[in-house]
Every structure is written in C-alpha cells, then in structure tokens.
Image (cartoon, rainbow, N blue to C red; front, side, top):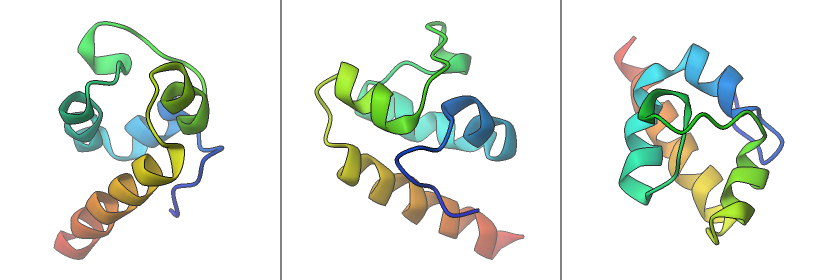
Length: 70
C-alpha cells in the first residue's frame, strides 16, 4: 500500500496500526492516541502545521520497514 496525501488516516491505521507511533512522534492526533481524526493525511498535516509531503515520506519509510519484516 503506497501512502499518499489523500490516504485516509483511519484506513492507514487499520492496515498498519504500528504507524500510530509515527503520528505520536510528530505530535499528531490519530485514532489510537485519544484524539480521533477521520480525514486524510494531508488534512491532518495541514491542521497541525506539518508539511504533508514530509509526513507522507516518513510514513512510507516506516511502512516499507514493516513490509520488509513480513
């Protein structure tokens, strides 16, 4: 699954629940950290003054690491 700006945060965390750690490290709310967010990665990033491109890059890097372990 390639993560893009328009990827749903909910869909991403259903498929890769451990990516919640990446959101937490950056200081972003997500479903598992108490402040549910139901939009896209880009919307979440913009609402929290985070560069969406950088967030997508970090998430894809972590996703790739997870996929390699499987």
